[in-house]
Image 1 (cartoon, rainbow, N blue to C red):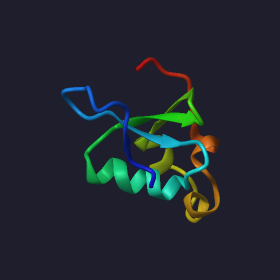
Image 2 (image 1 turned 30 degrees about the horizontal axis):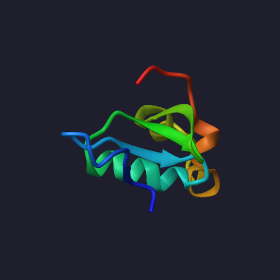
Image 3 (image 1 turned 90 degrees about the vertical axis):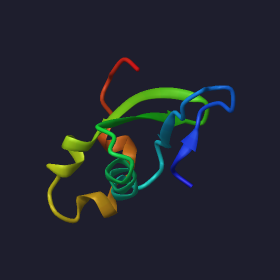
Image 4 (image 1 turned 120 degrees about the horizontal axis):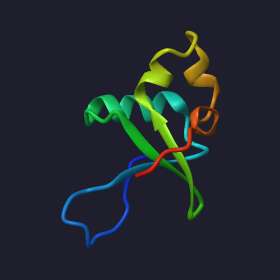
Length: 77
């Protein structure tokens, strides 16, 4: 599953996606939970963030063919 909580000890949920998840699934989850961005992890390593706007502006069909890693940008969480 692409949507996860970072820690059971947090008072609010922190969602992230795996670098190997499909981009269309990350976009679907961001829209569902009204998030502008989500952190991306590869295993236990933080890679950066994906942004809803970047994926929304991708060419048609691209999101079903590429994984989240193709959309990762550096960010501060």
